[in-house]
Each structure stands twice: as structure tokens, then as C-alpha cells.
Amino acid sequence: MEERLQKILSRAGLGSRRACEELIAKGRVTVNGRLATLGMKADPVKDKIAVNEKPIEFDEELKYIILNKPRNVISAASPQDNRKTVRDLVEEPGHLYPVGRLDVDSEGLIILTNDGDLTNLLTHPRYGHEKEYKVLVARQPDEKQLTAWRNGVVLEDGYRTQPVQVTLAGLYGKGAWLKVILKEGRKRQIREMGKLTGLPVVRIRRIRIGPLWLGKLKPGQWRHLKPDEVKALKERPGSKPQTRTYYQKKK
Image 1 (tube, helix red, strand yellow):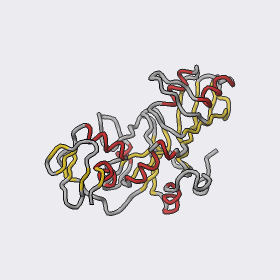
Image 2 (cartoon, helix red, strand yellow):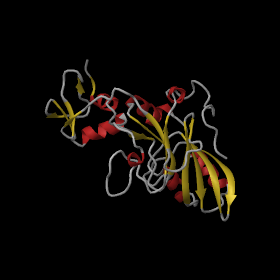
Image 3 (cartoon, helix red, strand yellow):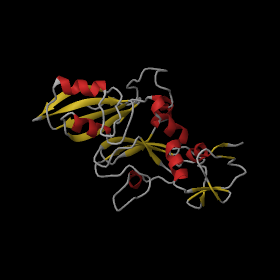
Image 4 (cartoon, helix red, strand yellow):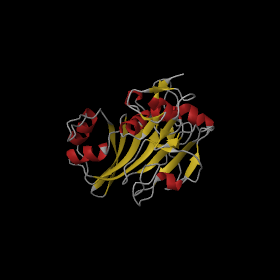
């Protein structure tokens, strides 16, 4: 049966549907030897689909891994230069792609999986999965600055961020720790919001995606998710409260 090409690629573990659309747009995908185009449909049973001239393969076993990404590690499945990637940290065979990317200077919770449907569910803006961060800013914020975050900040490209949940978690020298909860994830969004509101960001650590908490994993450590954790991640936001059933937030 024919399906959207990006959906087939995502199910084969090649990333989210949006990431797979980028593969198609960059001319890296062929169907029966012909260059694929956005919007194309294919039948994975009958058609020969290849990425970078390599036929796609469907992993028989779906894998779900949680990793505590250290700083100075790239959130990518394959090397882009000589820097270490999150895939280098996980000694597990097969295709695994990061969900919920963090910039190279940020740290914390990242999920790696070959489940394209879960990747789409956790990354597509319409599902609104919460992502929680501990953010260290160089200055102690006033209420006006926090209100700006809560109401949405107009970024340099003209985009207004969605309202953010932000509270003062504690003072730290001349700076402060903030608890920040987002339902979107634009590139370097927290750092840009800090820059534009006079709160330079020193450190970002993600501690939660939806119902999944980072817990006690140390930087560079990883483990397989339990079946009930995977089930909870696949629940649509609003279908049940996001609780700390699996791992309590580390104080």
C-alpha cells in the first residue's frame, strides 16, 4: 500500500517525519532509481527506496534509550565534524536517532530510538509535549523579565515564542537558577530569550520530556526505557496527568 515517503523513511528509523522531509528536499532519497520529491508516495513492499544510494531497511526490534547528554557533545546520529555525537556514547547496534535535540553547549535528557512514530509524536508542535529545564542565568531576574518569558518573546527572526512556564528556583551568586517548561523547541530558544531579556544563559540542563524524568543518570550514562515508560511517552498530552511515576526529579 502506498504511503507518504517521509512516513516510510521515519518508520525505517531515519528520524522524525520532518527530518525525513529534509532528506528528500536535499536530494538524498531515490525511489526506483529516480530522485524523490516532497509529497511523493511509495509502496515499501514493491518500490526500491534508497537513502544516499543505500536501500532502507526496517528494524525488526524497536529500541528506546534515555541518555544524559554531556556538554560539548552533538545531538546527531552521525558525525558532522571531529566532535563526539550522542550516538558515539550509546553502544547499541542498529539505527538510533535522537529525539528532542539539545545544542552542543546544553546537557541533559535525550531519547534515542528507531521508532519514527514516537519521534513524530514527541517533536511535532501540535502535540505540545512539555520539556522541562533547569536554566542558570548570569543575573538575578526581576518580575518584568520573567513576565516577558511567560508572555512570549519576539526573537530576532520575528517569531514570537509561545508562553513559557518559568519560576525562580534559587539564587546562585550574582545569578539564579530558573525552572523553565516549554511546549515547543525552536533552535537555541532559551538562550535567545535570555539574551533578548537581559538574562544571559550560562547553563541549560533538560530534566524531563513529557512524563519521563532524567533521574539519577550521570553525564554520558544511558539505559533502555522500560515498557511502561514507553507506553506513557506514547500517551497524548491531556489524556492523563504528567506525573513522576517513573523517576522522581533529582533535588
